[in-house]
Each structure stands twice: as C-alpha cells, then as structure tokens.
Length: 469
Image 1: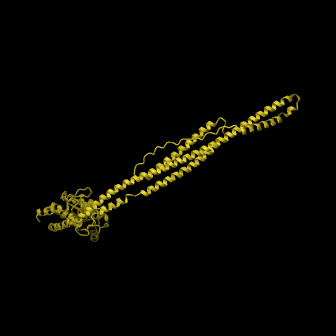
Image 2: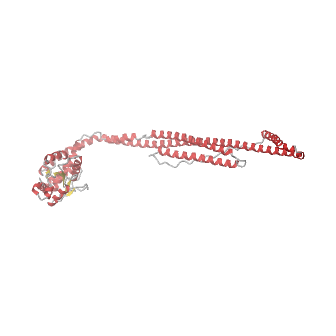
Image 3: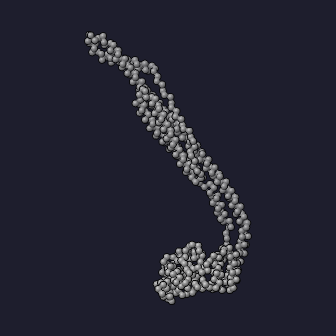
C-alpha cells in the first residue's frame, strides 16, 4: 500500500478521535512482566543480537514494540492482565513471549491457557523462547530466531512509522466506536445526582446540632446546680465551725474570710460554666465556623447581709440580776467560814459582795459571747444561702443566653446554606434543561461520527491487512 494513502487514513482517524499519534520512537523496544519470569535475561539476549531493548517502567515514555514475558509454570492473574493494559498504553504493538520452555515439557498447553486470559481475542503475536538456552550458547534450540526475525521486521521494516501509527490509530478508533455505539442514558444524569446531593445537604445535621445544644444546655445547668449545692453545704459547715470558735474581736476577720470564700465559690462556678460552654460551642459548631472567645460577663458582686447588731435588752438585765443573785449566794457560801471568826466578821460582807459582782460579770460576758457566736453562725448561713441562690440564677441566665446565641448562629448558618443551595439548584436546573434540549442534536452528531468512524475503520482495515496485521 502507498505510504501517502496510509498517512491519509491515519490523519483521518486522528481527526475523528482527537488524539495525536506522534511521539513514538519507531526503534524503541520494551520488555515487561511480573515476578521472576526472565525479563532481564530476555532483554540481555536481545541486546546480544543487536536489538536495542530496555526493561519496561511506568515512566510515561512511549515505545514502538512491547514484549510481555510469561512463565508457563505460574498462573496468570489480574496482575498480568493489568500489565497487558499498561503495555498497550505504552506501545501500539504488544507481543506475548513464553520463556523457560526448556524447563517445562507441557508448556504449549500452559501457554494456551495463559494466553486465553491475557489476550482472549488472540490478536497479539506469540513466541516461545528459552533465555537460559540462548545465554548458554544453544541459539537454534532457544527459539529466539523467530522472535528476532519478527522484531527486525517490525523495527526496521519499510514505512515502519506509518505502520506503528496505523496500529495506534486502530486502538483509538476502536475505543471511539465502542463509546459512540453505546446507548447513552439521560444526558443530565450527573447533574441530577449533583442536584440531589445539594438538596440533601441543605439541612443536613441541623436537627442534630440543635438537639445537642438543648441537651448540652440542660446538662450544664444540672451539673452547675449539683456542684453549687455541694460547695455551699461544705462552706456552711466550715463557717459554722469557725463561728463556734469566734472571739469577741474576731468578727471583722470572720466577715472578710466569708467574703473571700464566697468570691472563690462564685469564681469557681463561673470558670466551670465557661469551660462547659466552650465545649458545647465546639460540639455544636464543629465544621461550621470558628469558635470565638466566650462573651464578656461581669462578675457577680458579692453582697453580704448586714451583720446583726449587739442588743442589750431586758433579757440581758435579767441575766445580770440572776448572775448577781447567784454570785451573792456563791460568795456567801465561800466566806461562811470567815464569819465564824469574830475578828473577820467585818470582812465577810464586803467579800461576799465582791465575789457576787465578779461572778455576775463573768456570766454576762459568757452570755454575750455565746449570743455573738450564735448570731454570726446564723448570719454566715444566711449569707451562703443567699449567695448560692444568686449564683444559681446567674448561671441559669447565662445558660439560657448561651442556648439562644448558639441557636441563632446555627439558624443563620443554615439560612445562608439554604440560600446557597437554592441558587445552585436553580443553576443546575437550568443546565439540566439545556442539556436535555440539545440531547437529540448530540445523539445525531454521535451517529454521524459513528458512521464516519465505521467508514474510517474499513479503510484502516485495508491498511492493516496490507501491512500484515
């Protein structure tokens, strides 16, 4: 066949497939295979006969001819089938070479089975060789004679670039015919899938996040109340113990101590709430937006109830009277032995009065200290209960505000997402309508291209028959 005619057919196929057929070295040969099938030894034998061959690697470099080396002793799996596919992408002409025929007497049967897997159509040339025999100097028995003669014809034959390009054109043209002959489904199928995914993602996770916010807020509130109750009980017991050992001059120090403990109670409750709030915000807004710092919240002021005043009323007067009476009686009892002595009778009365006054004063002071301790214990208990209630109310207000803020942020996010999805759905609907309008035109164009490809395949078959493929 005339070379110009071959080039004309090749150019026609290139115009139909839209793929270039250049970039192949007409003298380049690669040898590939899997495992220990003898790729290196076959390459060495070919080099000894002056044929430029290299071991195949997935470097992207194209070649003219590729040899697939098989070992008759090992079965063929999907790995070898994948190697054949990649060799076809690397070279337009691929041949099967069965190595190690000297070691297996039943190699024809094994080769037939393996070839049916890697080349079910039987279109690849097939050879049987023994690299070990060739390297040992037994060239006639090695089977390399036919392989080398065939390679010389392929690499150095007349119009070799055009012949290689014809084989490459055949592969591209067959793929185009298969694609065009396949009945296409809905031309907008991919757009419909994208539209369904977009609609499904519009409110995805919204109810779960809102439920997490509500549940987290309730948990924060319950945990805060439980911890606050325990801390308040401990503080009440501690303040009662300190009040029971209070001295007359220790009231100011006791007030300052209680104010400090209430401040620590408030700060600890606020810190626990801030940590729980940050954790809830992170869970609720995970993947949606960044979690900012907690909002500024002025510390709850510590308000102590007024200290009860020291009152001296009729009750204290009665205590004085009873104390004096008891003192006089006790003093008389103590000085009674002195009254029996004539010379000391005059001392008995003043001593009795003095002892009675001292005992009365001691009873009054003891009564006042007991009343002070009792009133300060009651005052401290009232201060703890009052402050605990105020802290609980403050935490409840912050929990409610947090739930409202997080709910609002989620609502705004999903509103923005819904608007974005709506815009995208409208855009996809327009593209779907446009594709379906032009689908008949596309199909008619594909049919025209298919008819042209079939005609080109007929002319390409004439070229392949003429060059012996």
